[in-house]
Amino acid sequence: MTTVAEVWRETERVFRRARLHYGHGTHNPRDEAAWLVCHAAGIDLDHFAALQIEPLSAAAVRKIRALAAKRIGTREPLAYLLHEAWLGPHRFYVDRRVIVPRSFIAELLPEALRPWLGPRRPARVLDLCTGSGCLAIVAAHAYPRARVDAVDISAPALAVAERNVHDHRLCARVRLLRSDLFAGVARERYDLIVSNPPYVDARSMRTLPEEYRHEPALALAGGRDGLDLVQRILAAAAGHLMPRGVLVVEIGHNRAVLERACPRLPFTWLETSAGDRHVFLLRRQDLAGPLRFAPSVA
Image 1: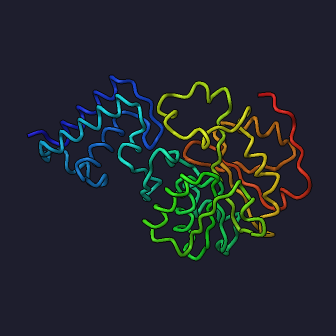
Image 2: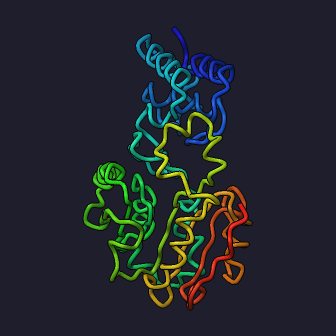
Image 3: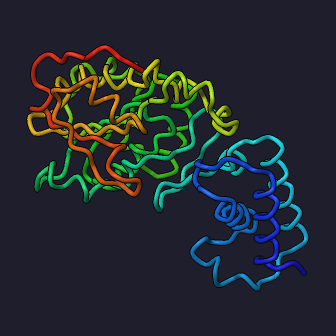
């Protein structure tokens, strides 16, 4: 009989030899192999270490090897093959209609935002560019009394988000809206707006690893300098924030570009597991008055 540990090591070896690219839930072949084995064998990841010497059935081993071969042959992110992605303890259904959930903002909800939100928890939350609905759902779990609007321009993405909202039993508190950013919530005001918008610049889009090319380009491409949607969000956000409301946006590796484009905005850069260069916070008063964007030099 093949044990859990043996098939895990075997899968790690074939992934390592295949020189796959990671970043869709794991960051190395060892963790990716563990995820595949746990999913295919029905093992809770929390119990994985304790089950290393347990035997696997021949059917389970065949399933793991078939999925590993497909991961290598297609270069699809494993999340698509398993129809599963995670943000913290929260599981989400995913397929190629949405990008695989990965946002540092999820780490910040709710505790890291408390200094800016004050003692009262937000009653209204907006998630712009919601995709699979993951951040809207994480926010709804973080703020159990909040009503959350989740907006995306993609109807296929919203279909996936609807499934996830239903799976998390949040239909009464999470409202899905098809909209180009704020267009569909013109009269709404929020205590907290979060967004993980498309922010990959044009040069990087041309050189993306094959795994990322399976994801919808609409959810990745941020224009020449990666800031097309970010600037639109900044220009309109004040009109949709309550007086003490805050805006939290993830922008990848674009901090320096954004600070050059908006030198007068007092960005607060939030600390995440990847440092303090990926997510900014602005208060409503920071966004008062007309915004002027310096010409891009990207």
